[in-house]
Image (cartoon, rainbow over all chains, first blue to last red; front, side, top):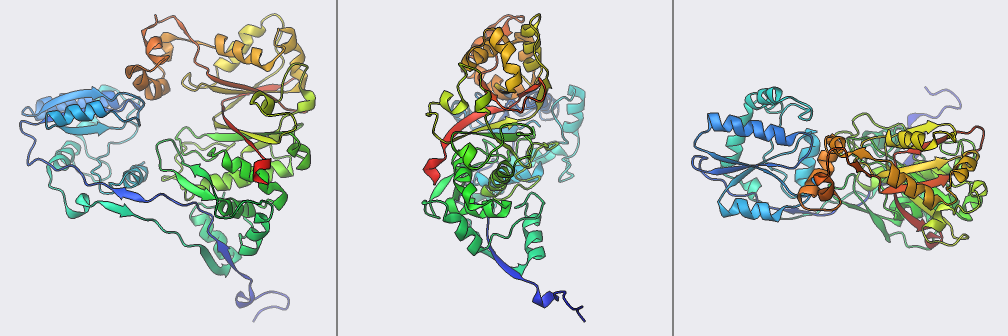
Amino acid sequence: MACAGAATASEETRYTVLNPTGNPPPIERKAMAPRPAGLSGKTVYLVDETFDGGDKFLQQMQAWMGIHMPDVKTVFRAKKGAYAADDPDLWKEIKSVDGLMIMAIGH
Amino acid sequence: MVDLVHDKAFEEGMPALRLAFTPTPVGGKTRKELDEYIAGDDPVTKRPLMQEIADYLTRSLNDEEKKTGVVKREKKRYIGPDTYDNIQRYFDDRFWTDQLPIIMPTEERVAAMLKATKHRPDEIVGRMRVTGEREAWQYTVETVAINAVMAGAKPEHFPAILALAASQTEAHSSSTSSMAAMAVFNGPIVNELSLNSSTGALGLYNNAGALIGRAWSLLSANATGGSVPGHTYMGVQGNPMANVPAVFAENVAGLPPGWKPLHMQKGFPMNESVVSTFDGCQSQNTMMVLQDEDWDWALKRFIGGLGSPQRGGKLLLIDPAVTPPLLRFGFDTKEKLIKWVKDNVTTPQYHYWLDQEVINYKLGPARAGREPYVTWLKLPPDAPIPYLDNVEVVVVGGSGNIRWSANECAYRRSVKVDDWR
């Protein structure tokens, strides 16, 4: 039983309010690049985007691959421009050798 | 960090992008420690990292990974009907609030706010993104009104809030650096809204500044879908200046002869109401008056000691009581003081290029041939690098002492308030 003067749950004011969020852009989905059956004989680019030690990490990865994946050619590259900038010349180079890419984002 | 990376992949149209993770951080680790990361497991999937990467490079694509097309994202216009407590909780859970009680943004309250402007509710005011790399969300006059109601602002504040919104300055940056923002008003709007330019101006000792600041804060969070830790807010430690940005007025009466108000420096007439925004605010350094004997050494140390040399923005907030010695040192205009700071606050080339933030943000542009960084890269190690490129001076304070502050904030833009009435 509710006490005199106190609102019960059913008597409590109910509000309908407006959504305060903005409008997100539509997402344009992109298909991922087709994969080769294996890495043997392939060239893998290790691409650093210059943030927080990603270069050292990829250089160590390159050394690891040299020992454990000797039939894979590796190429270390630092991407040009700020970390989020496009580097079309590099993408063109990777495509020209039918290469693959591991990009490291240091943080 | 994992959620953030998946969010970014989604925004770029590849929600199934194959992502491998190392333990964090990577920065600051020795090569031996990084070797252990490489030989170890992905901490998210618990699979050996290099085995996982080889699998990601060679496994055939599934149907989800081949998908193309456009995905529209709808939002529901109304929430409720429900009780105050339940709606507050619904908003808090989505980080649509600052985790403090809000005013319910009912259609009636929002309509009353909208009457304070002639602009249509569906007019697009601008776009914001939580960092430069994330997607830009759009917001309308109505979106701004909803957030103004939530903040407790009154219709008389609305044109000023809309002008701030039109600056498109994000007051809730998601940078891991934990940034805040500030806004400075000049012109007749200062008296109209009784904005504070005196004692406690940068704090919340002013109703209009606090309400406008809170509205700007809520809008900045909600314009981009809510300021959600791990997704759209990544400030490592957070920033005590970020919850309600400092919104204040320049103390125009305290300007010495020859010093123009900020809005006139930006090309507006004296009688124009203008709001100027600053972002990237990470810290504040305060000191007392400069002495005749060593003012130049002290000024270089005071400003130069504030943050990484990667950050070219500084905002000098000068109390009227501190201006007489600055005039004596020859700074009879703000512009002369700004030039002196830009020319004389430097760091040696060797230390500049060892700074991790400089490496993160400036080394890539230098390698791409962008000036001045490519030239700075070639200078001798002891060459002084004048890294400040965005310095502003605003006079504010109540002259209760000869104290002032340098703030790690960068000027963004100035917007006329009357355009939003």
